[in-house]
Length: 316
Image (cartoon, rainbow, N blue to C red; front, side):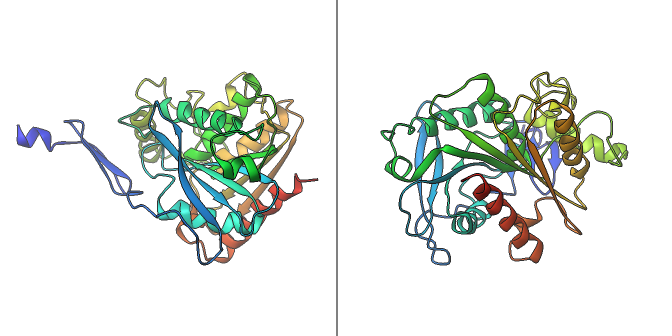
């Protein structure tokens, strides 16, 4: 029995390992950075519950010397839907300088992880977080920081990898389920985790690599129809171009295996009849989510500034 319990079902380094007895061993995103005043940026943060039912929470950030209303960024972390949290040093150390640079309020959403909570749990939680944020639109929501400082007429969704995937689907949902008093101005998708059965552009045709991505997707979404499922390949979704915003920034990295999907997304969005503005930023010589792993490099600084500028363009 002990040997069977320790038998590996899926080994997916460097992220996680799953065992036949249902146990999950995670290797990334298990550390926690406490909220509070960041001495480098003077950004303040605190953790709040947004869903009592699902026992899910988020981390709120306010810029230094916050007065009046600021654009609001709702951020969804990456990790293949299986690892990481809104509280890991990776995301805490990314959002502190972004909030300071852009002079914004941010809500970093935590959501239930697969495979213990298979998709669409992450999407459901993320939408609950969006609705919770929207509950502050009249200035009488449960969190005073958002009541006082968040401009709900100037909201952005963003995320990296799986979080970028979530940001896209939340923007589509904003069209389907309009929330009065809330305006989504734009979305920022960093190295979005989209895929498909057939390669696009000069995307890899290596069956071993494509199978690996398929395995990760099926781990997070066991009831999927495959990698042409509209959750991971939204291009053929009839709602694809129905984004509840007018501006999109897609960031890709030259060496990222997902780069072609980001380019394809931009191309198809322009052809969809959506009618908004889509911008593309490519980081030369970089790989997937490099800005999180090496936040002090020149390309990471350029990306952070581009995101901050993109958000601030919408203030006018």
